[in-house]
Length: 325
Image (cartoon, rainbow, N blue to C red; front, top):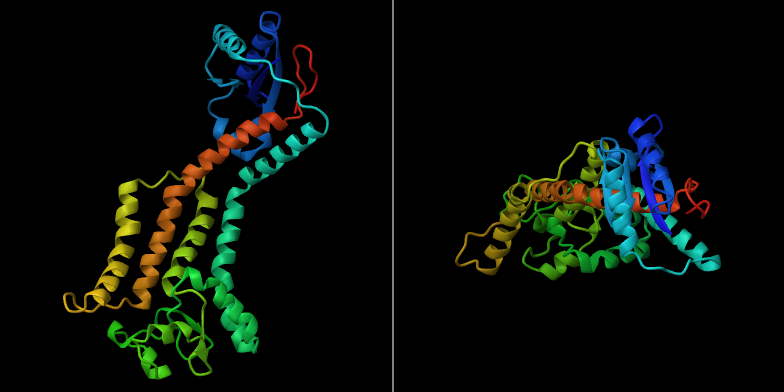
């Protein structure tokens, strides 16, 4: 039997009229009606508040305003194009319902899950220097090793804690901070040594990912928190703005640094500072959230809407078939 989802809310006269029209069409187009109260889900409320009632029949959707003739056309099209499918029952039905519940939960809480994952990713590297300070070097090195494929971990481009400075850039960076070479006695051209150096009592201990990566993922986390507050009002950042504000600064800062190290005889040697690495990385992270998260939110809202209808405990108010899930 054709399933009809009616997205509605209490006190909506248009919703009551749509329900009455569907009941009147039941003899002509037998169907099972599932009412989904949008006030039971904030995402559905945001999505449908201004357009209810909304009727979904298979691939067809109507949103206010519509009349009985529109419903007749949609019901007729859905029934003529539908093919009979065996009903899922028993254990298979229970598994399908459980899977839908899991996916619905992910779609409903995707932002909290994303923020938690980003937070863990950017916070765990700070645990490595804490463990080094506490004398648990073996456990700390597990963290360093785990992040090693994901970041260059060069000490002169990393943050340090428990030392006299938060960072020890190369001399050519031109900062007022004591340089990496001065504090460690290592050559700043020896990348392998800079990668392996995890710290000392004087310098403190290195965070397991570099300054720019901390800024990128920190920007993702901060942007995710801001999006949680502004999600109903924030539109996606235009791609051109994303390129100018998010991509261009980090491409110039990191790209010139890379090219000057590859072609030192052709380009002036340039070493980014902790401030520039943090600024460009943070802009990149925040702009990525601004660009992508509104689209993810829209996609997840569509998923929630589809699954909310499937999982609704509403009773089929017209025709045989009883309650549906």
